[in-house]
Each structure stands twice: as C-alpha cells, then as structure tokens.
Image (cartoon, rainbow, N blue to C red; front, side, top):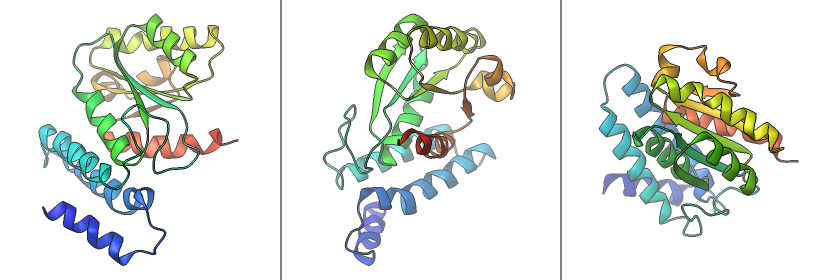
Length: 203
C-alpha cells in the first residue's frame, strides 16, 4: 500500500527517536489538512475525507499499539483528557470524521456517541474531561450547547467546549451564542484547535 510505504520511508529517514507523534505531526496532519481543504473547495467528497481519516487511523495504530480508542495513553505525553459526542442528533458521520482525524494525529479520545445535554455534561464532569468536542447537525441541537455549558459550570467542570457541524458553518457567529470556546469547520480544523487549546492545560 502506497500510504504505508510513505510512512515507513519517513520513519527510516527520521532521527532514531522519531515515533507516532512526530509521524502524525509531519506526515498525517498535513495530509489530512490538504484533504480537508480539498473538501472545502469541492475537489474532495465527504466520503473521501472520511476514508482518509480511517486509513490514517489504521496505519498509525501499527506504530502506536498502546493507543486504545478510548484509552488515556498514546503517542503524546501528558495529553489533555478529550471526549467527543454528537448532541441529540442521530447523524454521526461528522463525529466519526473528527474522531478519526484526532486518533490519527495521536490523541486518545473518549467517544461518548450520541448524548443528550444533561447526560453529556454529567459524563464529561465525571471523567474530568478538559476538552469536550460536540458535533451537531440541526440548529436546535446547536442551541442546546448552551445547556451543556451551563450544566458543566454547575457541576464545577471547567472543560473547554469545541463545536462543529452544519449550523455553525451557516452562521459563523453561532458558536459564540451557544457558549462554546471555539468552533471547527472540518476534521483538520479540530486537530489544529486541540493542538492550540491543549497547551495551557499542561500545568
């Protein structure tokens, strides 16, 4: 497989200490970023974005066997505690895209599946989640992010909330109204946001 050969060549030409995190940063994330940009301008289909994320995830698993889907260890030391969920909606593809991209980039992510606001906030608080990613498809679900935020605050959970999905693409200021800390418009956006937001969490 050409993709696997590319990864092997990179590792062979890298310094001895190179591992999955470096592989993700220098090869996988830039590739996913270009694919995401292709989708933005209509040159790449959504199914291709999805399959590329899954392919990268599967390839990197060979180089980081300790990274379990919902585990707390992986290629990056001192990772923030990440979780992702679809709020109310039954359309899970957007979450799957982001989850694949994050795992391919070397992050351990708890997958909460589909959740309602109260249950999502309670679970995130119980798990001590630091970055909570929420995917929605419909406007009513997007507006319920405010309830998630309020419940997190009431539970004393300081998790940062990152949102994404169609309503936020249509209204570029909606994420502020929903009480989120940041918004992403693609799977590669999510990876960049996590990289940006995780740094202050390492105390």
